[in-house]
Amino acid sequence: METIRFYLELGVFHVLDLNGYDHVLFMVALALPYAFKSFVRLLLLATAFTVAHTLSLALAAFNLFKIDPGIIEFLIPVTIALTALYNLVVYEADNRQGSFNMQLVATVFFGLIHGFGFSNYFRMIMGAEDEKATALLGFTLGIETAQLLVISATLAFSAIANKLFSNRRPLVVRLISALILLISFKIALEAAPAGWF
Image (tube, rainbow, N blue to C red; front, side, top):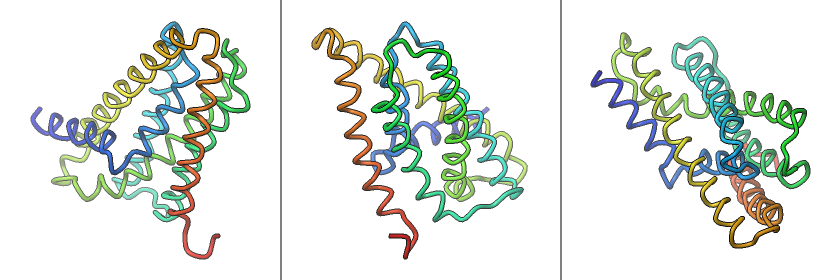
């Protein structure tokens, strides 16, 4: 139980670490188009992301699959940029089913990429070999907890923005998404392997 708690706290603080804000940016971009009334849909997206994230993290932690960390570090901000771009181009206030299904598939794929991004850190902090499964469970629970905090804060911000700007919520979503898009482009350019740009 102590091991799970230790890795749970590591998972929470790793996501909320101000030096590694890319995960928070992704969750904010994902949650921005939603309101509290659509919390179940958003929770489904976040959980799908976590399941995919855990799968790739497990594959890497148990040395079943390896991928070049440089490529992953570049792809992470690309996934953030694509999510923000989705908000700018495809965003619809009613979040129709077809749009949601497309977002679900993309979120699962992005979860796989982000999981590989966490894998190097996870391998460094992981304790004894026989604790891998427990460590993975605790770390995953920590990540999911942090994601729920970020999503809840984003939904609260959206609700406040909706009250303050009444019918201008789509504009607020697009403005914040544009800012996230610019930040993610900057991160992608910095993370791109040498010679790519």
